[in-house]
Length: 195
Image 1 (cartoon, rainbow, N blue to C red):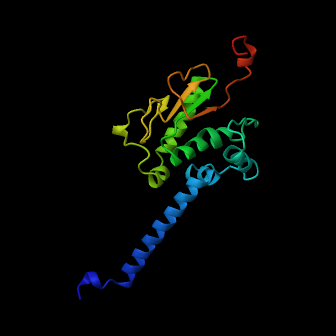
Image 2 (tube, rainbow, N blue to C red):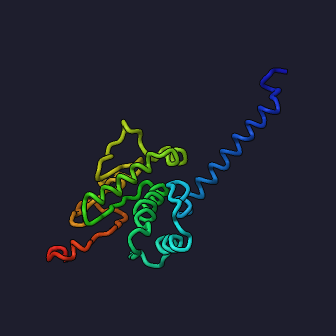
Image 3 (cartoon, rainbow, N blue to C red):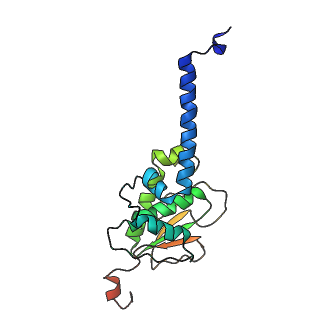
């Protein structure tokens, strides 16, 4: 009998371990795609999310009866991590054809959110579970400080995600989702133009 047909016990155990890991990886990916909180904690690494507070926020955003949502929480309660970054990425991995616009009072802060999203898209976790989502760096058509484009089938003039100040227009582009994260501040409401 040839060596190929007489595998050792160790060889079989290694092969089974690899198969178990593939099954576990597939289950992990499916859970991350279906559970927003799980995705944020285990893919993005947001370990400080609290089931009571952030779980409720996640449920409202994902299962609330109204399409438009307004979330009001004090500063430092991880709204931007959970929704602006986490929810946007979670929905993007579910459907790369979806387009998003992230608005903030200032262009700099909107771009900071996009930068965090870009950094997350380049982590080993994203590339392991969604290897075809992000084009290789030498093939990226749009990957700037204010927009990014992932691999998708949909032809659209809108990038996958763009960052804008609240005063900018989306004329000519029609994002599927618009997120307004801190669109006003104390400084804004103290000016006539801001009001």
